[in-house]
Length: 497
Image (cartoon, rainbow, N blue to C red):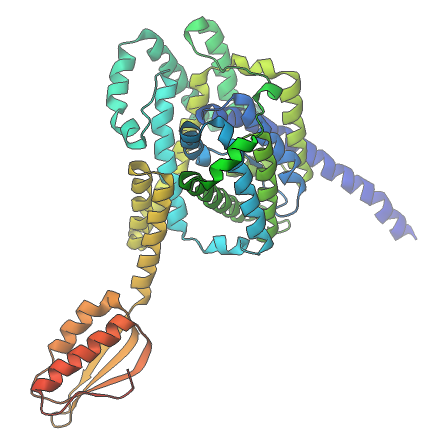
């Protein structure tokens, strides 16, 4: 009886401790999320409040659903470039349709249990995708830090950076704005070296807070975020917007949204699982939770959401124990957006651009590239080619290039064929083939076969082959016909072609 009473007394205490841990963590995640939600929205070319709407949905909808217990969702820097291009090409009114279709696709894929297949996507392609996004994001936001207009093309943004610096140096207003942004980056980088008491304040919040003070001292020469009001910013898609689903460009953008958002979310889930000892992610359910969130964001005309590793890591490190922390962070975002939206108008645009430049730098996996170059050079080349294609051609095309190169590399690695020739001096030459004979290895294989003596009979043993494609089969037949025409005896195959 005494043991039962002790257990009963301990249970409320344990629940209270769990709730307090989740409550504390939710405040930390909220403070990290505010500047990132607003910054992603401004960089995406939509009202700042829409970033908060997506963060709210990420907390109250995605956060409430099963899947990953501690992962936090919201607008992500990884989709900023693609969203900006979509808004510029199709208009902000079409954004809701794009995001809604993305959410429905994710729901369908989760229902079909395809979530685990995203784990099969080459890590090099995903990291190359993020590196390309990071480069374009950095280039574009450097212009925003200086208060200057950026070129529309990604490659032009990078090529135009020297000219942007010259223009900035010749303009007092642009130079002031750029210095404010650079100061924000310095705070973000050095904040982890501050005393522990100060580090209780998340670095993005501290950096933006100091930028607000500096912006107030500098006066109207520094551009601030435009405030439209939460309800005024919400733009549900109209019936005419749904007719654009027949456009090829819209379909391509939806597929890119779906691929990038799903892959980023599920890779983030795998990373978050390594940070805690709680329940593991159920990938199909997590994909459906992301889809439900994106469907709601689409109905509201907001930004697409993904799981965000920065917020998720902050949630885990702050001591969160259950999904209550991420739901509560959505409540705090809702209260902030509803009660103090005017606070957004105090934030300098240069500071938000600096937050995203810092986020873009973190998207470029420099350490991973160095490690891959030493151990798996082919994977490193796929990563860099994907990033370069995204910068030079575009997001969707770049991802397709990366996937294609990854498939080709895999085919090359698995297509290993070995030719061993036995020569007893008086018997026919025995050429034993083993491995996987595909067209990728055909030139070398034919060179080896054609180097065999023309005046000797040849027996080809194919029993060691576990795969022989049509190109190799046809080439072997042609070689055998040529060799037999000049040989004493026809080429014999120990196994039928």
